[in-house]
Image (cartoon, rainbow, N blue to C red):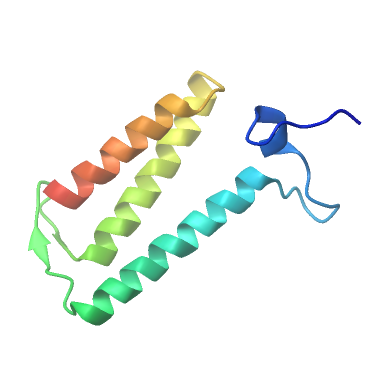
Length: 107
């Protein structure tokens, strides 16, 4: 087996065992989701209420709602990018980050 360079494309997609299709990329994805939800929980603990507001979509949203909308939208951005363009995924990452900033500021 060849030596893998840390953080190279092959390093990210190397299988981590035989159960399911876990790779470092899938583990990083789920760790990110858990970190987002944990951060929102801590934020809500120290600043309760979530500051509901009405944005450009004309719906009342709290911080948790905006997190959900940004994560769901990001998933659709990545799926659409993979369908239309394929890899690499650095550009949809930038689009998804811009989407999240938009959602938290304007929605």
